[in-house]
Length: 470
Image (cartoon, rainbow, N blue to C red; front, side, top):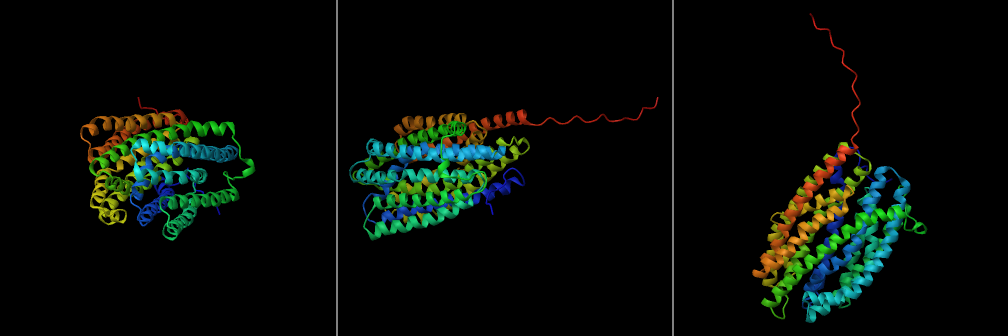
């Protein structure tokens, strides 16, 4: 029995939520396991271990986003091929995507191993924080080829409407991840090296299981290792849709690295030799991650739904699809962010115990979650533009609205008032502006799509009229 969902027919909102819910659970579980990494590494009682992992986040994301963009491009190409009803194109996209996952995974591993330590030092890491962060990234990047392949496989499942299979697989391997964390940290006395090793092993297992399941698939997305190749049409589509997304994510991470650098500077000025603010920011960022991945589930649904409808030239449903994606994003982002905001006195102490670290985490969550639906609208707007085959345009809008504004904010306002509050305010301001621009662009593209592909109404036969009395 297939788990694939027909996205082109039937009620829209209920199908979006049926698609989003397993995807959201999958992403939330991943966040739970990431949180377990930080909480368990805190049990090692190695000073600064939590903060060290936190300082690597933006740098790791910058490198990882290079292949994550291609995974998104694979989602678009597979979904569009399914919408067109072309089995040949879908299989070409699947095997090209998996070949590309190996290439980008190995390339990303090499790049990460080469530049991670110098980059961490440039961001302001020093002393034992630098040593711990360098050790964590070294082992993490050795596992990146498995992480890349897993991401590409998941994108293929999502493109064909199956979000339940990744949920089941990642639940199993996530439990394995937590078990390995406990074994390595508490059993073998390891620290950041233990949690990064556990991440690599669990992703390797995920890759194997997902590849076997896709091999047994009898639909459009059947996968065979011997058919792996770079097919020209599919590769071009994946690159055109994925490279802008990857560059966007990488440049976003550059702005986040600048924010991280400012936070490290504030910490070093207030607590020389300590890491209270760094630890608190890491804890707050990890908690915020729960809200982001929940909201991002709607974004991924948006890309898949819009891509399939775009491929099928379904002009009659495209408006309903887009508006329902915005509605779903608002409901998901606000409910999760407000819940986490209310629960912060309970959740934050699970990560850190220092009063200054707790206050830093509270500050981040309070500012981020006030209007968190704006980041959801920003991401959905970007997904709409990507789904309508305008990936470069989506990237340009996001870079202008978010990255440029954030950098200007850091170089002007934060430089004049170097406080945590001023640093964090850069996020909601940039989210709001970018969401507005994406909405305008998406609306223009949607109207053009409907105008180009709507079928003309058949002419009606002339109505017979009764003769008027003279």
